[in-house]
Image (cartoon, one colour):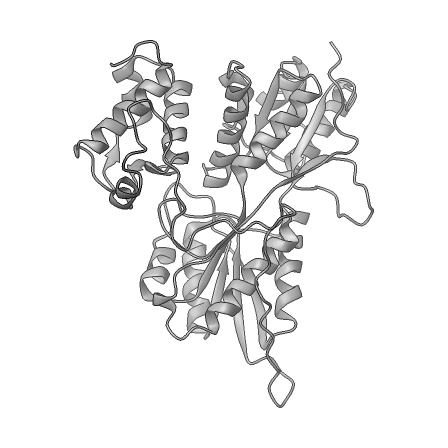
Length: 410
């Protein structure tokens, strides 16, 4: 490969940039699997993951959990816009995709869409329903999403019908079709954990049916979406704990299947370590486990990991897992935060008091729910949904510091 002094992950990036520039790889062409690339370039999985992450971040490829990486479907447009700026040195190509720009305001929050308010009908009843398809309502994150949606719809002529899918893609398909049969004006969909896309969601897009994805998105596929920036959230978590002196920082997820949300946060975690020129230890990326929240199992890999003091700080990708790790620490006699710091994504507390116990990365789920509902109401005002483009609202995560994190003590 050219320029052997380049880091290996940059050499892999440049290899694929060259293939794309020379036309050997075209839009939607599949990139070889990570395993094949590890063998081809004789590198570790982390090196390959770094290379693919940066290619995706710069717009050259898109990644679908469980399916692999593909050349961007707009690569021709990207290359035309990037002519004269894409030298062989591996610099990133950054553009704003039409209809998909993040909408931040000067305070770092999201610009709110205008609230569409309509009158109730003569009888005072709601005219029709909007369906919310969501895996579960088991934590305060989901409840706050629901509250945000309701804040908008209670002033509209629409009522909300909630269908739980229990993280089953088959139930998700059934829920979508049943709500449409019931005459739902539109849908807000929190996609289930799955290795592949739910084709019913793609079918909605092709048919021009009004829907908004919430919390998650389909990489490489343009849709209306309201979500938080997981990449920034992962970086924010590492930067904060690093500033407290922690160097062995574990990131944990108990998601049964890979999701784009989990991938984005882990990519942010890796990017933050890379910027600090720190070694990325794969043993600290804990994703291959399930948790029985009804009990503490001393034989569970996570329990043994905590007991052996392998990490001094834990980033959990949901609040419920943070509570579970806190319970393990308490049973082991480890003090939080003196011995172990815990930083959760989302606040696991009900938020009834000004300060909760857990330091966390807030995704502003109340505002996320409001944004999703407002997008849908705006769609209803458009004469031709297919011609109107897509709205992508990205909320900037915020660090909320509290009692579960503290300085590293050797």
